[in-house]
Image (cartoon, rainbow, N blue to C red; front, side):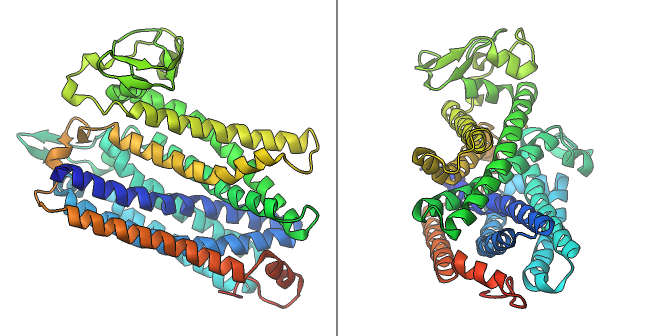
Length: 453
């Protein structure tokens, strides 16, 4: 591989690993907050046990998310000095404000973990609200840098020099709100389905009438309500994202759909793969006029094709597959969540079919894969630019060589971290079972949150 490809692979691997913990780190606090509110409203101790157990898991994941995020920040400076020169002058605000967002998240999570039994109920809820705001703020602020890369604003380049800098215009770039919304909604979706995975698996292993089964069934239904709602909102936000691509990054939209010729009444192609030689999507299923409607809410919207642009500016054509995979995962999550809720609410089913339960077991990993597909699609679809039509990826990269050994070592570190997380979570929850926490919650005067920490 060339030094540029190695640099991209190293940073991509770091972000691909970090984004798992960052996404769950946004979604899980919202689940904890919901469980805490339900406990305060119903006084059902099973909800507070859920909150306690999810908090412990969140603490472990946060312990890995922080160092991997730090590594990503360091690699930005070392691997992409050309990019950071522009960001340092034009777009420093997200990095500066993110420090405060993380401070709020860490501070109030500590209060909730160590003082939950000693503070008033409204203070517990307030603490979790601030944790959720801090977690979401951190994710949105950092993702705003990515939004800026796709729709740069707030500066000009004259004779190779950056002039007329307006940091707030750069911060509130045209795609800020759409990108921020997509990140937040998809993170809440992922957090809910991670809970669904664990709950469904535990239900399959437990006896139908046991207290453990009913506990996890309650957690599963809660995750389906939240996961279904936010997966649907994510899909609606995705429609708006497509319209922004049509306006600001038309090459990416064309590559995502394998569209080579500019046309109105453009079809939306599902599945298949893009064949550059024949300029068509082979084995894809076309929905007539749908792409034009997706791009502009009108069937006669003119969608530009790849042939309108020099070939060296085309994104990699495999992003069509990434886009389809992302949309496919999201559609499946919407379907299975509303199917489960319909079976429970309208058909009064106390137990779901086993095939559906196994789909719920798979839903968490699938949601994470959907995040990965979406992130890779967003970044790869912007190529060959780091900052769209302003700074190329080649001009952003370091001139250092021999990065291969660094890539291998970091990959090894991530494998070790992943195995360590799995070991710690398994060890803790095997040692502290649901029955243990339920029994402890039943006893008055016995602390729940500060126990087994």
